[in-house]
Each structure stands twice: as structure tokens, then as C-alpha cells.
Image 1: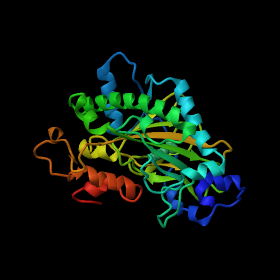
Image 2 (image 1 turned 135 degrees about the horizontal axis):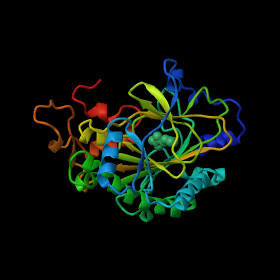
Image 3 (image 1 turned 180 degrees about the horizontal axis):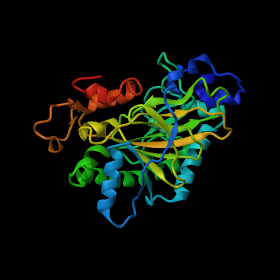
Length: 344
Ligand code: AKG
């Protein structure tokens, strides 16, 4: 069954035109009204001597573009290379080995789904990528079922990014004028990793690598190889290419953080264009999520940052609702709109 080996399987079979299911309406990848520019997203040096400067930079970037890149983040280049190679190796497994991992629903084992197209069940068309999604928390990564070929690198990556995620949320808390631990406690226990593989596309003008979306989580830490494609929506309308410096990691704000920060931090739309380069784009996103022992635990705007005369903008949501949202509705409707009292 071809679909079980993803778009990589289609490419390997030598197709010259892409199946109709991948056709996207043009507005999904070109906006005729918009000039595409390259976005210089802020570069933040985490080893800078003055913490208050770092806090200010993180706050500024999170409340405007919603994206920034970090350097001197403490994760060795060798580990970054290893995990990219491990995700590449998984996606380039022989079809009979890779197809064993194909699934569309979350499974007990930890691999949530693999195969082209988060959006296969939407009428609008599928995206030109294969994704390996693995749950990484609240237990340590070793206790989840991760495909053997990338297990060791993914466990190492989880450890390193968890530590860095704690640091970032500490800075973001302080940026809101709160104690360092204010966000960390709420957001760090559950983690999901998406290993995205965007192979050569024979008709990149008919589809996209990944449709425009905001991340429904708290915070995303993104590692990319040097193949372009990622675009970020600037000021709500213009698409800009985001090219990270070699060695840097990209950080972006998710819907949960926008809601709990009462719009002080922005969860911004982004997408990936398809291309016909020979070398695949590979990106690894680690999403940090709320987690609690109890599904009834609620989350919502932090009362300490709302001034008393501000009208209520968001309702609270509970953990069960959040889990159902990320399982069923990613890409369809943002958590932000779902929780708004006055949805657009
Ligand atoms: C996602 O996994 O949600 C992404 O947006 C990935 C972006 C990329 O491939 O750079």
C-alpha cells in the first residue's frame, strides 16, 4: 500500500505529477498581494552576560514576530547533526520496514502517526511531507516506543531540549513580570516531537510542504537543516522566509502561551513551501505542552497579568479539551479562536 510509505514512497516510485489529493488552492502557497521577503528574526545570545538584556529580547520577539532564534544555547552541534541524521534515516528506511510504523491515530506505543499529511482527512488537500510524531513526556523518552533507528538520538534530543525549554520559559515568565517558575510548571511536563521530512516535489507549484498553521502548544523549539521552505506570516498578512543561522535553534510561541499571556506573546501562522531540490528539508519540532495528573485541570489567562478593567477575552480550557484538540483539530481551527469569547 503506497500510502503507508508516505510521500517519500511516491517520489521513490518515480512519479512525475503529484496525486490530486495533494493539490492545494493557490492561496495556500502564494498570496498574489504579498511580497515575499526574508525575515531577519531576532538572534538571541543565551550566553550573554546580562540576564535582563536576554529577558528583554525574548519578550520583544515573543510579543511581535512570535519567532526568534537562539545561539549559544548549550546544545552541542554534534547532537543537532545526530538527530537530523536519525530522522533522515527513519524516513529513508526501506518501505517494508517503514510501513510498519504507519498509523493515523495516536497509539499506546508513543508513535502518534507517521505518513504524509496531517491533513489527509480534510477536503482541501494534503501536505507534501512525512512526519514521525512521538510522545516524549511526562515519562523520560526511553520509556516510549520510538523507532529503533532514531531512538537513541531522539532520547538525547529530548533531554537537551527539555533543559533548554525550562530556560526559555523562565525567561518568558520574567518577560511577563512574573517569577521564573510561573510558566515552567504549567507547561513542561508533556512533550511531543515531530520529525518532518519534505522530499523532492515534482510539482512544487501545486502543493505545500506544510499548510499554514499556528502551533496549538505552549512553546516550540525547532531544529532545521539548511534546506529552505519555512515561512512566517508577518503582521498578519505578509509571508516572509525564515532562514535560521547554522547552529541556531528557532523558538516560537504557541496558542497556549498566547492565551495564558493574554495576547502579550503571539502565536503566529507559519507554513513550509514544497520545493524541487534534490536534498530533503528536515526539521524537528519539540512542542511543550500543559500536563497534569488530572484531565479536569484548567488553564487560562494568568490573573496576575490582567489588569482589572480589561474585558475578559478568553475562557479557560481543561486538559482533556486540550488533548482532544491536539488529537483531532490541529490545522482546522486554532485553540485561540476556540477559546475566544468573541471568535472571529
Ligand atoms: C511544525 O512541525 O509544526 C512546523 O511548523 C515545522 C516547520 C518546519 O519544517 O520548519
